[in-house]
Length: 553
View (cartoon, rainbow, N blue to C red):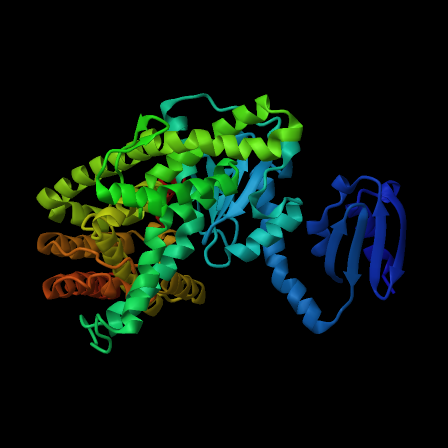
């Protein structure tokens, strides 16, 4: 039987008795039918003592009641996420102010109608929140590895659509941003990162395959020769990912920008088709519907397909306005391909490739003449690159160059140096911390970095809350980066995110000196980070105060 007091509390949180059409109890499950579902506060109902679960489908509310110990423990285990979710939604201005909510590996990302309603300082104080920052039009709440659990609860409590789908009725009244250089830059970066992020699993697969090849190949263990079938197959599997990168980007870009996905993939297929590749390899002049075509190899290319898909969106909109509905299914895709083919092969593709080549030339020149200084700065100040949202643009730029040259001297080696350094800092932090809470923060930071190359828990949980640890990281990473810059060690294999061995394997496949100097640089950063923290960190949290506020705000 359901207690009368609990029943009254449920009625209150479902909009009152006046909002309830009817209800009945069946096998310890209370089922209600309501008039206005927007008045039902599921999140608060789940927090009531004696409630195991609650969900809603249309006007039907289903509430499971009981006191089973295991179920009660599960309910209490999720209660902290429910309470956190309710609090976070309130502090960003309520669910009516949220137009979109999604998450990455460590952060909840809110997009809001009215940014003035956000209570930043109160969000930072919510238990379980590691930090907060605004970046590229998003309000990001840093949670750590458990972000998916929190996200799922936010979705339930707020009644949002999963996977970050914008709520249409809210989106219609969303304020328009003024067009400025900053908003245009933010929007451009948001588009590029939105196109790249879904493709990251492919890079992870490529990194793992390259790691296997490097470990078993002649440059290390010598188990496989370069002519052996397994070596050739594994190398081919890894190179296929980069060769057909335009296909992956066509898919993700079409989803991000709202283009017809099949048409976008067709455009990628045209860029990489044997016919076009053969013409380019032959070096003979060719025209596309009378327009001279630039002889460009689009395999492993990055920018051309993004420019093509971005333009495709507007071409499709034009055809959809002109062509009658009865003919759209047949004519819109066909005419879009016919228009985009000359645009892509003769204009957009070459522009994208030339931009990439020009950028590569500038960055390679910088690396050759000031690599040591750049290495010390990037490695030492990497936490600030992440905090200020600069890591993404640099990653995309250097990755595009890596695809063209097969080597990176500018960014990834120093990213690995920083990663090894904070692993050392995290280990020492766990050893020296006196409270169980701080040791748990250290464990989360260490495992996130070592297993997934995710450094936000370290940045916001350790470095920005302990000035001593931050200073140690800056010095240790800078020294490691300086050594790699001086010895001009470069990344050959994109394995920086592979657990444990990835940062070391990334330097294999070139000269012995490249491998040795890369590993020495990583070792320097790790040892200095570990020993420095063991010596100078006293085991008590030294709050960053105003410093942390400036970073997160």
